[in-house]
Image (cartoon, rainbow, N blue to C red; front, side, top):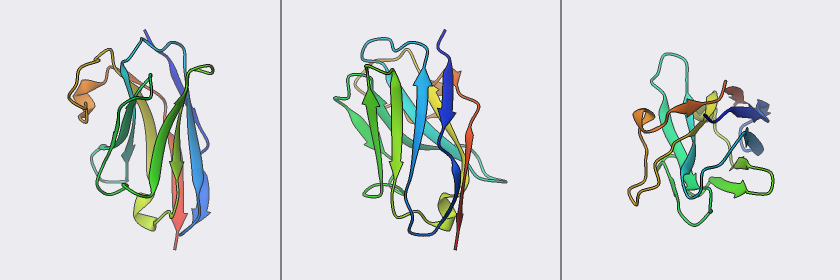
Length: 125
């Protein structure tokens, strides 16, 4: 069992930055932890994923070059640094964890069995 608690959401203006945090109760070695988001009326979508070792990470095309995912193993925490925010980034952001540790990046909801409660990010134009 892995418990995840997100924090750091808020209301910002377009072009601003925000950093989300997700504290995990445990971090099985070399498994993946990820960020997803869900906008009103839309399906939950993949944002970024990283191994707890920090050695492998991948991003959705829509956030490449603007968002950065990282981990702090000493704190069992994963971060999502979001720069150059756009109104279309408005969503509830969820942290997710999996026991999978393979070489193919897990980018689907069904790949993750543990979820946080979500944190709202609102970007105004």
